[in-house]
Amino acid sequence: MPDADRRGDFPEMVTFTEIARRLNAGDYLTRPITRQGVRYIADHDPLWPVSRESWLRIGNAWAVPWAPIEAFFRSRTTRGRGPNKVVE
Image 1 (cartoon, rainbow, N blue to C red):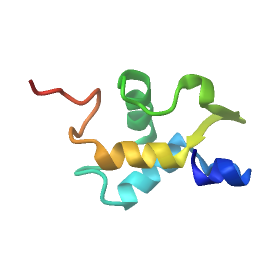
Image 2: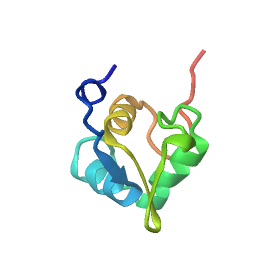
Image 3: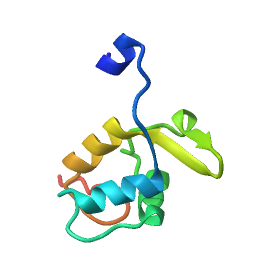
């Protein structure tokens, strides 16, 4: 169980705009990504770590917990849109 859940804290929630800003500011990507690019990955990559039922509506934006998203992009080997390609 994540530490935040054990302490009763809420996970850090971020919008798709904030996800794109953090990804572009960090060393996650080889080229910039937009919020639309992040959203496309969320909608189409079966490995996206946050189920749609867990998204939180805030005004006209959606927010998701940052920790699993950060881990997803940190471990993602294929850059670009769509799912990772499995090499057999």
